Structures are given as structure tokens and as C-alpha cells.
Image (cartoon, rainbow, N blue to C red; front, side, top):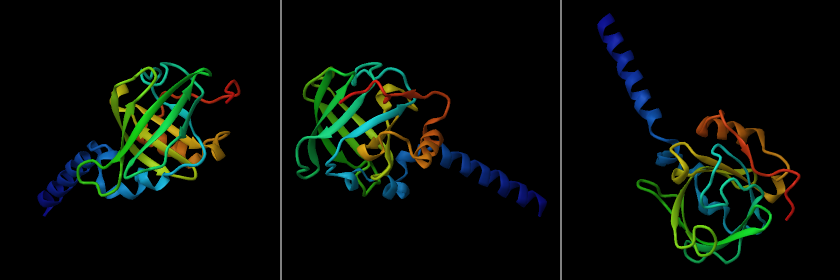
Length: 187
């Protein structure tokens, strides 16, 4: 009886370790919390508030003051946006909402840079969490294994909802935070 209990405990611990080894943005059962399409169209800009990596090669390196504005209607699952960063720079992009393997929800964005630093490049962002009224958290695999950015809608640009910060720290780690929006930002 004791041997069976110990085996069960070890087996359960092993399964729990495997389950947590799969990044949360790659778990289809969480898709309802990662559905990018529910936040489109967005009529007001979104702002990058926080990330856990210093340098973004596609959005101005270490630039702050990042605003994203949708500039075309969503047709099918494709739209365009403009990303403004570092007070004077901008990039125009085509966004394609897509779902990754096993997902029924649109949990990823393929971003094709039409103008700006990454012109001609395409990257993929994974929606790790979305609450269209409070925040979106993206996984940025091109910037590192655990790289994330937290965006807020214009209505939240002066604050990060505590639940969003908690989720960001849980999903992305709380070791490093690079604040991207401050009083120096003027749009």
C-alpha cells in the first residue's frame, strides 16, 4: 500500500512538472484568455507599458514611448497598424491574427513590417493573456525565451492594473522590468 502511494505521488509530481514545462501561451485549454480577436477592432491606441527585456530590435531598441494604433479595418483576420516609438519614429505593419496548433482561438499575431526598422521582416507574437479593458501580455520569442511585453489600452495608460502586473510577473518573471511609458512621453 505504501509503495503504491509513493509511486502515485512521484507520478503525479512528474506529470505536474511536465504540465508546467509547457508555456501557458501554448495550452489550448486556456485559449479563451488568449483570444487576440476579441480585442479587435481597437478604436483607441494601446501603449506598451512594461517589458522584461531591454532591447527590442523591431521597435527601436531601447526606445520608450510606444503607442500602437490600428489604421485599417479588420478584413478576414488581417489589419494594419502604426507603431510610434521614441518620440520621433514609427513603423507601419500588417497584422495577421492566427491560431497555433490545437487552438480554436486566435492566440497569435504574425506581424509583417511594411515600414520602419524591421521593414520586410515578419515576427510572431503569442498572446499569453488578454483582458481587452485592462491589458494584453505578449510573449516575444524573437527577443528571448521568456521575453514579454505588457500593453494597456489608452484608458489605462497611467496605471497598470494589479491583476495584469501579477499575471505578467507570473508568466514572464518579476526579476527585470523596463518601464516604457512615463511622463516624458508625449503623443
